[in-house]
Amino acid sequence: MNSSSCVAAGHDAQSALLNLCDTLRGLPEIAAKRAIQLAAAQAQEIAPVPLTLTQRYALPGDDCAAFAVADGYQLLAMEGMLPDFVRTDPRAAGWSSVMVNISDIAAMGGRPTAVVNAYWHADGAQAGELLSHMKRACDVFGVTFAGGHSSLREDYRPHLAVAIMGEARRLLSSYHVAAGQRLFMLTDLTGSWHGNLPYWGCVGGKTPEQIRAQWAVPAELAEAGLAVAAKDISNGGVLGTLIMMLELTGCGAILDLSAIPRPPGDLLRWLRAFQSYGFLLAVEPDRVSGLLNYFRASHLTCCPVGEITDSGTILLDDAGATCEFWNLQQQPLTGLGV
Image (cartoon, rainbow, N blue to C red; front, top):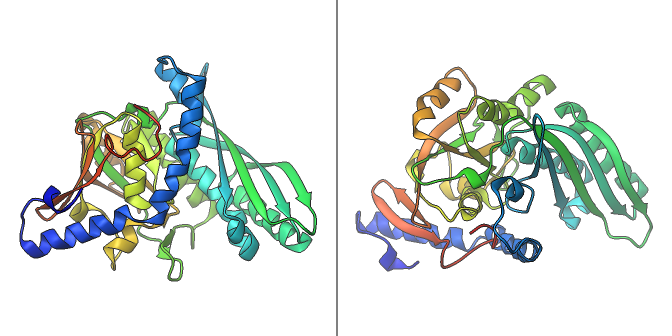
């Protein structure tokens, strides 16, 4: 992945795209995903022999573990909050710990049912604020706040982990990604930036009913057969999310940067943004028109942004300039998948 990977489309455009690729590859949010390699190695030790697809659903790889039941799948996921975030902004940490779990359930084509938490804290007032805003988020999203584990001692450093359960009638899974599928991006451009941070918030000004309906959209797409896979755009941004989405099956993709729906402003900021509501979707070619019709009267934006390939590489295209961004065969990120 160097300058020889780019093909000519005008020297300035080629140089700009190469510089963008270099910057995106170096993002700490993407590098942090390499920590998943430890869990990947453990999963391979547990299951060294070939597994059925249903067995793979239950192992690390997707946004949730999915367990087949009579009428679909039970879903289970967990997210941890950074200790400094928990300490300095318990209000946002409490809300976010629930919201990111809700998005993980949504990315699997599921609907959330219950949340549990485990926290350690040195300050009772801040711990109370943390819990209050977890409960507030659960009330907004219509999810049961089922308690968990509490530890309060003056010499503790604040820590928080939140787990979620959900259910899906029809599963969206990155194990379903295959060459020839169309790549879509689903986002909410009615949101706004959170200060100077690369965080795009999408719940302001919406009622709980509107928020619940919005996060139920991926489940509706799954049940209608309009998408086969999804991955929520969170830490790691669009490109980090795409790498992980492809890694399970070893596929590649061509991503058209000019087609990505985005708010006005800096492209790099948007590509690295944690979107409180944003998903990459894999769609079979014969379902594209149905998917577009689904969003015809929606405030949400869902646009085709590329194609899944069998190359094992991610190729970025920007108005004719192209550059290889990532080679999954040479540089695994999480170590999960093939």
